[in-house]
Length: 183
Image (cartoon, rainbow, N blue to C red; front, side, top):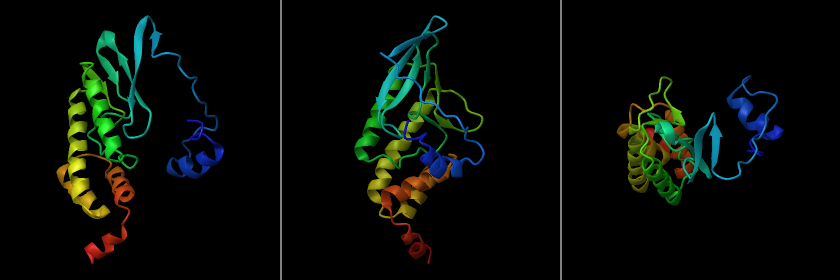
């Protein structure tokens, strides 16, 4: 987090992506001691998930109401960001989804999703299915374009195809093939 709010990084990375939207004062939260905190007498449990779309992901579980706030683990009808995930990390992400599912949530707030989201636990399985599809497709494709097009064909209704394209470029790194394939 400290690296993400470094003024030089904010200027070079965040401000171009979110012009006029980044506050001038940014703060890093204090590190929680333990994995439990209480809000108005309700237990909130931090669940360490390991690697999901990035390293060191967590979720927040509210056992009394069966709620999981999934952080970066569950996506709601959105192409997951997999650019930081090799095969091992994608396996860790699948285990993170298993850990969330094992909590038997009644509602899951996805960390990334459509503008009018629902909080259905089905998004756990939908994210899992996407990751499994991705594992198969990434193993069978050689170019960024091919990976992108095959995943888009399997999941045409998910929003944010830019995330899928960034992933394809990061993992296949050969966007010049686009010109050759499109000739």
